[in-house]
Every structure is written in C-alpha cells, then in structure tokens.
Image (cartoon, rainbow, N blue to C red; front, side, top):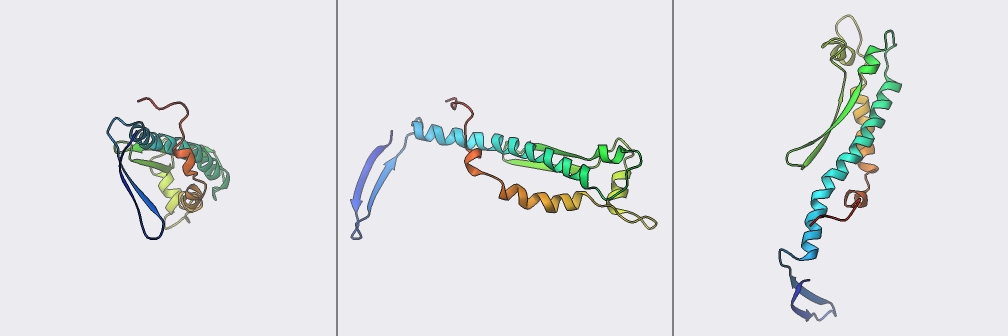
Length: 147
C-alpha cells in the first residue's frame, strides 16, 4: 500500500501522517478507475434524464397539434465529448418536417406568435438535473474495475 513517510503530533493533539503512493498502488489504480468511470455513469444518468425531458416537451408544448409531426420531431440527445470530459444534452426540433419549422415554432415571425418549448424545458430541467444528481452513483462501479 502506501509507505509511511513519517508522523508527528501537534500541540493540539492532532496527528499528521504523510504517505507516498507508488504508481502501481491499489489505491491510486482505484482512484484512476473511478475517474474514468464517472463520465460514463454521468452519460447514463443524462440519457435517463433526456428521456424525461423529451416526454416533458411532447406533453407540454404550447401549440395545437394538427399533424403531430412537430410533436414527434421533438427530441433530446446526449453526447459524451472532449476525451470523455464533458457530457452534453441537446434539445431539438426535428429537421425532418421542414428545416425551418422548428425555428418558426420556437421564435415565431411577424405574423405568427412564438410557441417556445425548448427554452422552458431548459429552465425546468437544468436545475432538476443538478438537484437530482447523486454523486455516489457517478463513482459507483457496476462490476470490478479492470486494472
């Protein structure tokens, strides 16, 4: 494990222990494995929340359904980026209907008012994502770490 470098006691009665860890130490390897696992668990958490956000958008959009294409085109996608350092959730209108239709619904134009759903969903789910995030689950292994 660690090699004890020394210990000393202070006048307040606290004891300080200094340890030096080698690179192939089990503790160091375990911490490295945890750091590699956390972004993967975060991505899984965000994917579960993306399903909730998509359902939220489809149930609470402010426009009246006529063909249901716009509602069916609402989606939430999760991507792991930059060497597994960043997880991004994006809320979108589908471009399958018409490339401009989602923009039209979200922002409106001179003749038609806007029917925003992406912004309100962001405001609803942003704080919820952070409040419901359980850090102990991020660092949990589903199996033993491979060393």
